Amino acid sequence: MLQNKVILGSEEWCSFPELGIPTIKARVDSGAKTSAMHAINIAPFIKNDANWVKFDINPIQNNIKTIIHCEAPLVDKRIVKSSSGFREHRYVIQTHLKIGDIKWPIEMTLTNRDSMGFRMLLGREAMSGRVLVDPEEKYLLGQPTPEALKELYQNSEKATSGLRIGLLASNPELYSNKRIMEAGEMRGHEMHFLNIKECYMKLDAKTPEIHYRGGKILNQFDAIIPRIRPSITFYGCALTRQFEALKVFVLNSATAITQSRDKLYSLQLLLNSGIDIPTTGFANSPLDTDNLIKMVGGSPLIVKLLEGTQGKGVVLAETKKAAESVINAFKSLNANILVQEFIKEANGKDIRCFVIDGKVVAAIQREAMPGEFRANIHLGGTASVIKVTAEEKKIAIKAAKAMDLKVAGVDIIRSSKGPLLLEVNSSPGLEGIEGATNKDVAGEMIKAIEKNFKLI
Image (cartoon, rainbow, N blue to C red; front, side, top):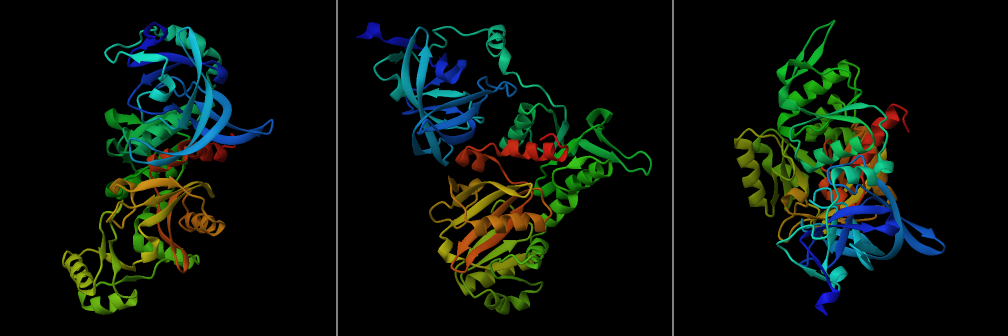
């Protein structure tokens, strides 16, 4: 029996002839039940009256210029909880796996594995009865040289289309920033990460400039993608304004970002556009506390710091006494706060709509951890795919337009009065929404830039 089984190491190269993938490195993991392959731009379709799915894959890790367009029979759609805690609706395909000289059919799920170390995970269901694993070994069946890989994928290289795009942000290792860089390079653009703190500028009527560390002048950029964290809003927006003055296209303007960071002003803008929000109060003096609480319907209620982000500075006060204590404590620190009615029927859930260039390109439902009312992913909330209503889409698009944002994360809550808008984020994170929906949201951001230059 043993002699009929192939022995694999913990990492091996394999191929998928029916998908047109000549070789791909896989993590061999008997601890994982199902196999998974990296995929983006996943879309189901009908072929010969049968369900199929098409998708794209970058088969070589850290090489986003090489892309294979695949299609395969669709056998199922399952909810899978990933290692990072996201609940995903994943498509399941069946195709033939080839390792060494043997080939057999396997099932595997499709998911975005950009944040993982391997494009392919080989699970125990696919190996059962056929494989033995020696975890101390690697590449027992050989591995291709860089030259061989280049030869195998020589017809998959994408031509560059030549835009020079800068990503203005703080952390190059952040998932969202890595994905935007990869998406731009995949679509053939020259991408540059520009650390906000390492930029400085020259204000001059005739020759305004932006300099980078070492005195390098940042010129000849076609577009800038600002991803400015709240703590550095003032300086990040100053740099963005300077790029605008140099006639560089920016994906979100400095004015739009600045007003989106002012929660009170942004709510006033949204209300002026006829968008419903939870009843909200704002006051300057603790003497107004009692009437402020009554104004929003009494307790329980939400108290928000105007400068808060990612759920920080947001408190649920369950009683009138607790509300008074929290409000007075914040006021004693000279903090600007909002009080807001608590939508109990939302049950710790909200909807994040990702709006790009006037369209909702992806949407997820975020659900808070047990005992928590804030659904933010950064606070342990989980994300799952949801079908948003036409009214919710309309609100999201209208909100982004009211804030003059080309890219926006719009948070909506479902209430007994209908959908209500919570807030609009000018630098929404990509990890939760790409992980849950398998959509190439970063690629959609790059497409919005291409559309401005009439490349698509």
